[in-house]
Image (cartoon, rainbow, N blue to C red; front, side, top):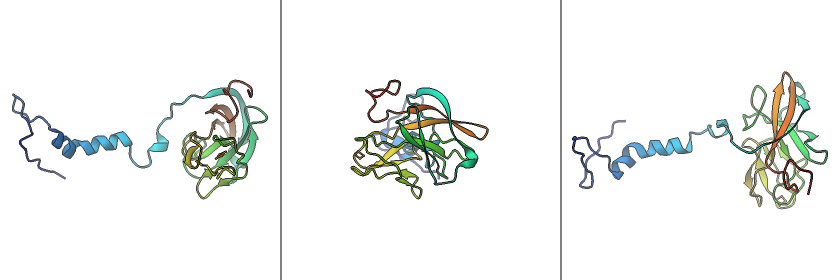
Length: 188
Ligand code: FES
């Protein structure tokens, strides 16, 4: 749509005759586009590369693509025997997702608020983990474990995955598992 911009007393002109864009003109002509560029378009959020600290751990096979059923999580321990996680095929493209549909993700199952156990709380209708049994936090597994609602302020730690052929490997942890001072050390 071509919109004619009518100059107002506040609009200035430069010496070469080209109009200098006033704040009003900027808002009318370009501000909306700049805003769109800044916030991104719908559906782009999960596609953007995530720059976050990750702790690398030994590459460990935790499952296979062919054995996974959509919406049916599998429990596994990583990187330590007492750190319990789920591997799940969401059926929707997810941040950090692997596999042909980029929909296979893995997350720690301890709530980041006060360590509430969330085993068995996966809700396939929402691709969410929770609510936590202690204070009801729920986490979005399509968006790197971001908090949907509840008391927690930190995202759920995501297990970094790689796929080789049909095999799924855990290779690191993104985020801090509740109760650990750092993911490179044993429980404090
Ligand atoms: S421990 Fe999970 S919400 Fe408080």
